[in-house]
Image (cartoon, rainbow, N blue to C red; front, side, top):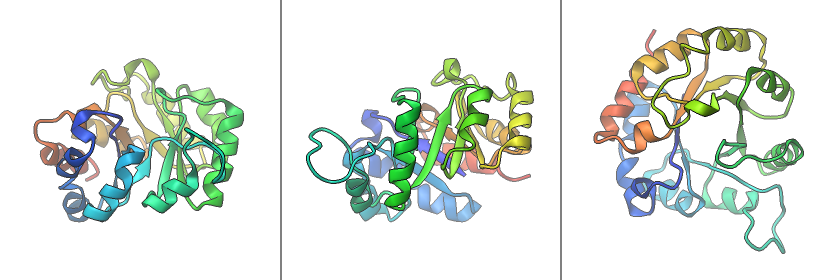
Amino acid sequence: MIFLSLKTYKEATGSAVLNLLSSVKRVSTEFRVPIIPVAQPTDIYRIKKELDIEVWAQHMDPIDPGRNMGWLSPYSLKDAGASGVVINHSEHKVSEDTIKKTLEKAKEFELKTLLISFDPQTVEKYDSFNSDFISYEKEDLIGTGVSMIKSEEENIKKLVRVLKKPLIIGAGISNGQDVKSAVTLGAKGVILASGFVLSENPEGELRELAEGFKQ
């Protein structure tokens, strides 16, 4: 599976996001690989309505509807069409206590979860938490285009052996070979941002990434 972290890039905002993601359904169906955009909250409804694809949120707060000015509720995300949420991204870290509360609240509202961590020890610790997927991202390589897979190969192999949750690999993923390497090591999928969002040929990039799942 491929998670597309859209962040707040202009190329992935408003009407532009529909053009960016126009090939997701087609490529996902053709290659039989789940491709999940992780969108800004203001674009979730638009993506779901216009493209009819699965879409996740980039963040949520563990709250119920009510007096929570400026916070992001799971109720609102679910109502907008989100199927899941990413928790603890490097650009929006939260405390361990907040992680646990957010996971509980996501389950309450039937939102799937991807929990991100940045070192092997914490990944193993978070495996006991109530997420659906867990991601390992080497923080200093995020957004660099330099894949973490080669330098972290042994750690990834170990994590695949010991984790109960499906492992998603991030940080520097940018091409089909990165995906192939991650899958060969036993990962369930990858998460990436600029490698897709800033591509001059988004559909071509998606196709190359999806090709990496062919073993």
